[in-house]
Structures are given as structure tokens and as C-alpha cells.
Amino acid sequence: MPMFNLVIKNANIVLPDTVVSGKSVCITNGKIADITDKNISCDNIIDANGGYLLAGFIDTHIHGGGGADFMDATITAFETAVKAHLQHGTTLLLPTAMTASEEDLAAFLNTFKEFKKTSLYAELTPGVHLEGPYFSGANPKSAGAQKATLLRYPDLDEINRLLKIADGDILRWDAAPELPNSNKFANVMRDNGIICSMAHSFATAEEALIGIENGFNHATHFYNALTTYHKRDQVVCGGVVEAAYLDDNVVVELISDGCHIPRSIMLLALKIKGPEKVCAITDGMRLSATDIKSGKLGSLKNGTEVIVEDGVAKLPDRSSFAGSICTMDRALKVICEKYGIDITVATQMLSLSPAKLLGLDKTKGSIEIKKDADLVITDKNLCVTNVVLGGKKVK
Image 1 (cartoon, rainbow, N blue to C red):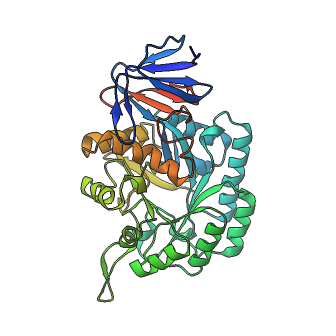
Image 2: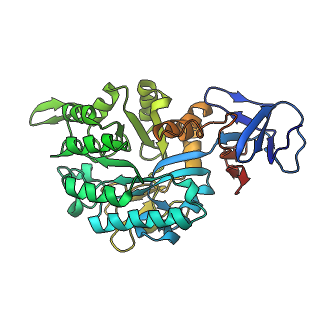
Image 3: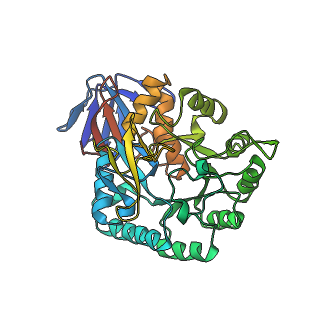
């Protein structure tokens, strides 16, 4: 009889295509070793008591949490945010920067390097995500909560300097595809194996499709700060949304807090793209996983003031949402309970699709033998009761 380090029993095991009951998940050396209906003896057993067992959540767009923002550029801030979201089931995430000066972006990248070297939580962060600074200021709705004074066109010299500092740490970088040099930016991203995402854009569908041809392969917080069907100079245009739908290879992400995206839009995106091309994200900022009602999006030094109202972060003048206070367990409940979407689809959006986006689906993103034992256990009401990271219980 093989020896297991951990066994999880009495769970409804959520797979990408079905839910399995009456089996135990057995873990050895941080990996899923077996999924069996046999009665397994083990010194370390978690009884799920009829709740759900899901793959650990993967958040590819997240600015902070627990009172800290990654743009604070301290190891303490990184650890605070990562630990806060881990308690809510996020076992992998991309620390996300926002529009900032080159100096502040360099500080963010350098802090991540030190975090990787020194922190016990570095295994949760395979790389970083730069949201900006190459965004459109042509329309206030395009800029959203990004600081308009810091928006700029893609600068290849700046891009190369930041790439040199990062030394492979940047896994994703967002820009508006209609800006001068944006196609060159996309080419550089493609050459460096970086996910290139359309964001905070005032592009027409035609401009976005040209960007896609040049390397843009993702759409940031789909429908938010992106163009859709509109009239420009008395001419009807499509937008980034339509371009993303037209190209089957483009992956889209939805802020799944129940505020940014209505049920009809989530269902439409799933119907057109399929769950394998839709990632759920939080876009969580420092007030995520707290009860604090005001703070800064971005760094404490240079960030933007926001308030929390109606369960979402907003600019004080209420002209725009400003990230979210979502955690991935809240996203799970929104998708399944509020929007009535099957939990098997939810686990694809929360785990497997983002794992595929990052090229990590061979080891993460679903409950399969030989994959990493990054797991979330909930009760019957989808409230997180236990989190397992690398085969070890962390909640």
C-alpha cells in the first residue's frame, strides 16, 4: 500500500467536465498521486464533509490585497497581498503593476526579484504583469482609474530597459493597440514570449485586428475600458470587444465580482469564446480581503484615492470603478450562485484557463494525477474551509 502525505475524502471533486463523488484524492510529495474509491488509511486526512474540492485558483490580474499593493514595492507588501489572497483560495497569481513612471515600474520589478529570492511565498508568483503605461487618453472611459498624466505612447527604449531589469520576469504586458509604436510593442512581446494584452483602449475593431495580427493575443478586463460598437464622426465602428470575438485565438478575462460584468455579458463571452478562452480575474486592489472603505489604488506614495461602495472600488467622484475588492472565492460564488453557471465551467475559468494562458496547465489548473496538489476545499455553500498548497494545508 503506498504511503500518502495527505488524503482528502468525502468531497465532491470538481473536474473541468464533471463532478465526481465517493472518491478520495491522495497526495504524495506535493503531487496528486491517486484519485480512488478505496478506503485509504493515512495519518493526515481532511474530511470535506460533502463540500467541494477544486483546483487552486489562478489570478492573472491582481494589484494587491490585505491592505497592500504590489506597487508599494516592498517585500512586506508583496507578502501581505499574496498571503491575503491565499487564504481565499488563490494558489498562483501574477502581481500586477499599473500605469506609473519608469522609476516606479523599475522599483516594482526589482522588488519582485528580491521577493523571489527571499520569500517563502515566492512559489505562488511565477512572474509579473504590467498593466500599462501605454494606454489611450483619448476618452476618459478608456483611461478608467489609470493616471492620465502618466499615460504615454510605447517607447521602445523604455520597453527594452524594463525588459532588461525584469530579465524574464514579465509574463504579461498590456497596451492600447491603436497607439503609435503599438505594433512594434506587440512584436517585441511576441519575440520575448510575453502575453500581449489589449487594454484601456479607444481602438476600432480594424485597429484592434491589426494589433492582433502583430502579437496582441489577450483582452484585459473584457468590456471594461475597451471599445465596443460605437459611432465615431458619424461612422459606425466595431471595437476591441468585436475584434476579440472575431479572432478565435484571443483569450479574454472577466472581472468576476458581480459588479463589473453582468450575467448576460458573462454568458455571452462563454457562448462565443468557450470557457477554455475565458479567464476569471479579480483585478483586486489593496482593499481586497479587508473591511477598509478607502485607500489608494497603486502605491501609497503615488497612487490614486479610491472609495469602496456597493461592494466595489470606485474613484471618489464615482466616474469610474477603480479595480475591485474581489477575491477568487467571491468570484466562484458570483459565477455559480449569482449567475447560475455550472461549477465545472467555473473551475475552468478560475483555474484551468488561466493555467493554459500561462503555459502551466501540464502541472496546474485541474485535479489530475501527477499535477501539483494546489487545492481549495469549500463547504456546500461554496465558502472556503481549507486551502492546500503543494500538498500542505495552509488554511
